[in-house]
Amino acid sequence: MNSSLSQSQLLSRQNANQLLDSIEAFLFDCDGVIWKGDKLIDGGKKLVFVTNNSTKSRKQYADKFLSLGISVSEDEIFSSSFAAAMYLQLINFPKHKKVYVIGEQGILEELQLAGFTALGGPVGAVVVGLDQYINYYKLQYGTLCIRENPGCLFIATNRDAVGHMTDLQEWPGAGCMVAAICGSTQKEPIVVGKPSNFLMEFLLKKFDISCSKMCMVGDRLDTDILFGQNAGCRTLLVLSGVTTQSALEDPSNKTQPEYYTSTLSDILDLMT
Amino acid sequence: MNSSLSQSQLLSRQNANQLLDSIEAFLFDCDGVIWKGDKLIDGGKKLVFVTNNSTKSRKQYADKFLSLGISVSEDEIFSSSFAAAMYLQLINFPKHKKVYVIGEQGILEELQLAGFTALGGPVGAVVVGLDQYINYYKLQYGTLCIRENPGCLFIATNRDAVGHMTDLQEWPGAGCMVAAICGSTQKEPIVVGKPSNFLMEFLLKKFDISCSKMCMVGDRLDTDILFGQNAGCRTLLVLSGVTTQSALEDPSNKTQPEYYTSTLSDILDLMT
Image 1 (cartoon, rainbow over the protein chains, first blue to last red):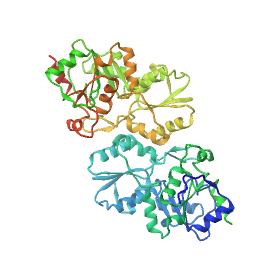
Image 2: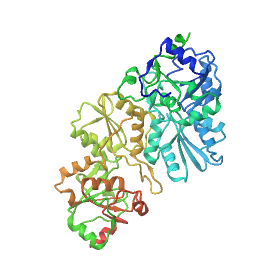
Image 3: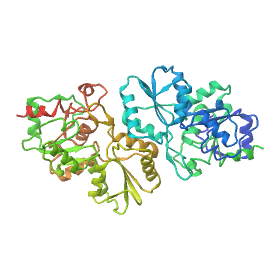
Image 4: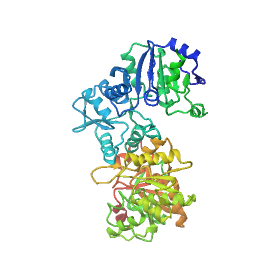
């Protein structure tokens, strides 16, 4: 049910209940959606958290949820850091080859959990995510590996242009570091986070729910909503994060979610 | 005389003299062409040096020439750092607006010489070149200015993917930093260095020589040779730098120089 060509509907009591009746699971983005909400939906629906934030591992995410008073299992969290590790596992990336990471702790932790070694020795894959500590030598080493090691993989956790590192302003996202490596290698990466299908396929294998019975909830049109629509999920945009109502309604915007609402708490109010 | 569709000719005594007879000026790339040569062409031809290296100012370039025993006037040097300053001058960029530089000393010096102020106060233009000291906060500030300051310009000195910072390996070029800012701003820059026409038009105003009477000599197909061909210059590729003979002859390569030769000194031998 791809509604990208029709106009989005504002979420109302009536259509919220229709949506709720027809789905079994909510796929939630985290930043811009969950962190600004203070309650979580309940009522027999499966909740799955899908985030392009590569700086945290699933465990770090679960801890963050817990610090907000929410108990979420690591199994219900799909981060782009985890997706990078799962991609390497899926392609049977040899364990004796090393992975070079341009990114932060989340990627390193997930690679370690999946049994891969990061840095040192022959590098067979370069994983690029958001890196606040980016510098010329990281860029250089990643570039050299991709250009000169035969078959070296170039994996991007995601290509989000900017993110909310602080409330007051947007900061360059993984899309900045990924583009830098594209610029120096003149190669395109394998993207494993949203909106790529890789994460969705992985998630579908884990949970026995069809796409049409899932609703992707997120604050970004180009990742969250596109991710949901590409897979044939229902989609709900929340305006509490990156996307403003005027951006949604701008004629240049080609991605229309099925529903939109101002914040996550609206859905709670509407579903009671 | 655009020879991009025909096969390149190896420079020989015969065609070298034909070339020499028909031109008035040589446009030379520096890195990969001049630095590895030990003599310079003489014989009544105007010599102009056109380089995408943004880390040096024209004065620093003249000093480098001098350290190699070659006396070149600053007026004969066209660097992408200078091109950035000239672009701002051409568009009458207001002197009270500041320019934010992601790059090195060469850009700062050329901006200063042209009367522009870099950093501090309202930023109206972000100039991005090769920056060995790139970090997240430079990327962040450049991104913020381009995204949030109304009308803020995004100027790239050049988009060279890699360069020869050391003889042994290639290092990310300005194309890496420029792509990073493209990734976070989702905007495309105004490119002022090779192969853009901006530098050529500026150069033509300075010297009263028609394009067909100039020969661009360089080691890169995607910047030097393309730059020459775009303007209708004669072109000579030297294989002493970035481009190998096999890359030149690869079927995927669409840019054929009119002539090619292994090093700059060949042209000297052939022209006597």
